[in-house]
Image (cartoon, rainbow, N blue to C red; front, side, top):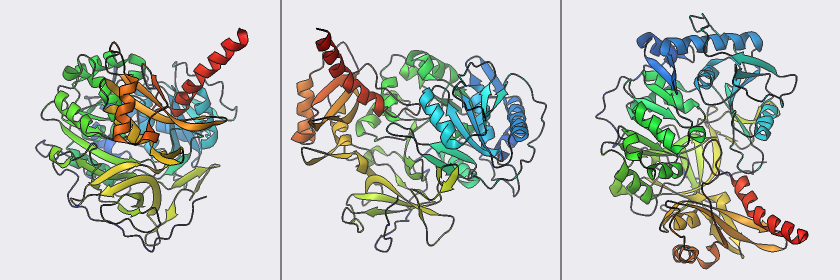
Length: 543
């Protein structure tokens, strides 16, 4: 249960010194959509794009395409079928691989009059089973002929087959019955433990339009979704851009880069650790040759990352950094100015307009100016947690001054600089005790990234019965043919951190196992640690 939090002593920061596009692509002409009119459908932006660009290609999946008119037709048809199959207030999940059908389902899910959830069909069956159960889904949308395994579904869950190749004949956005339930659900990645559900209301059109304006998205832009299609991937369709679906998990990096180059990618949102790997592959410079905007999120962004990206990407490419959480949405954002990076990590940005924040010191009061504190966010965010088929206030606190706002304790450790930029320091839950002393797993990862030839690094705690906890590091190499010097890596960590933070074990992997959202799969990494002892024990027993 959420511990009580005394808001009285907290000092709330609400100053937004610059607009989000400060230093951004202001030289790129664009024609942002006007906000929706009162009573207009939640898919107002799709309606307008269809009217402006009916015959233009909207979504590309390999050799298959949907024009805006075709996309509008498929989405309208899917909305009607869901409306006929599921009562208002019900929960509808889509279970699909990345592709045209998934794009239609994600778009339709924004205005179904029911609670929607998108599930990546590449996720393990165990996770799919948990999400269906936790969401209390009444129906599941699957792509016809896709061969998705449905053996785990309860008999009470209705299956809706969607054929993206067939026209629906539905020519308008028919009104959907009003529902008192949330518009959509999202679940945490589940890298450790059971996924936790969050409930969200309808999309905030003002936030959507503000993002388009600050990034100068326009009809000439080309976007790429590199994994499971998400709501964020389809924003560019509101201005008539083209979205390419390139699933690098299935295609591999080399083929993915070939398709990115052929698409003429101009705008990309991605996590920096995976992008590092991309940029070390031959052909990367050509693949990203037309990129004008790179948006980084989801992880610490190192100063060395920015230098690498600047050296590889076109000179005109703007780099944006954001810090957000699934619960609270966007909190900080900025366009990188290299002269403002004065340490090993890049700042995460200025406060966004819709939020206020406070920094909580370890003793419970407000953090002093320039000092590290736990980030508390105040403003519009998720409706609440999703538990047992209902929206609850768990993980959130009510805002006593605004019923439309909530307060969320993030667990992020940040500081604000005198120039008003915020720096991400680490996660409170990634601070662990080793031999009685505090160790920050992120600091160890940063130190390992400074070791020659290291392309990626993840550090976890190694726990075993009867043995003290220790750190275990997993790394991938930029050039696997060059021998790796573990002793040199440990010396680097010692110099950058402390003696007790040196990993007791360093494992070389070809790739870091990752979840569908590209976050490290900590459960699989933990399993890697147990493989070698188990094999030794089995060999000993056999001998």
